Amino acid sequence: MTSTPLTTCLWFDGKAEEAVDFYLSVFKDSSRGRVGRFNEAGPGTPGSVLTAEFTINGQQFVALNGGPQFTFDEAISFQIDCADQAEVDYYWAALREGGGEEGPCGWLKDRFGVSWQVVPAELIEMIAGPDQEKAARATQKMFGMKKLDIAELRHAYEGE
Image 1: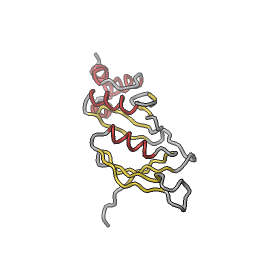
Image 2: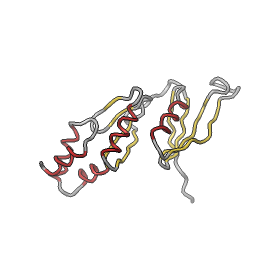
Image 3: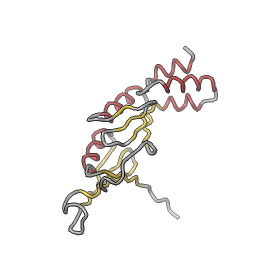
Image 4: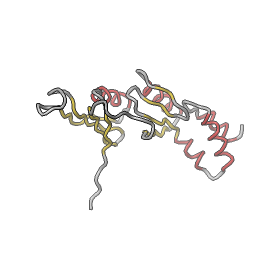
């Protein structure tokens, strides 16, 4: 059996195309795919966007204008493993643009309600490392932050 790619479907209430435009502006390695439109069979206005395909960093997505029945929550989020503080700062600011909300421990919601974790890859190494005392200090420091600060996390990890 061949490997079948997975596509993440994001359900929007009439803002699928706006969301795709936003995500394409945030992620440099992204592209737009096919756009499907409602036809006379409905339920949407004929010609309006039903689905919009896009790719971010090699991950396939489809944005669906499904209506108000379902909304996003924190049970599903997308984690961005950032190489350095500049990437953390960039994604944090870009994804909050236009009404996004800060959350604890590097989490945020963008203006469409999609949850993101903006995480320095180094933090994963710190908290998953073999030294449990260092990991606990870094984790405790993380609990007190919204946007993650790598320098502060390093200091806590090292006990400084």
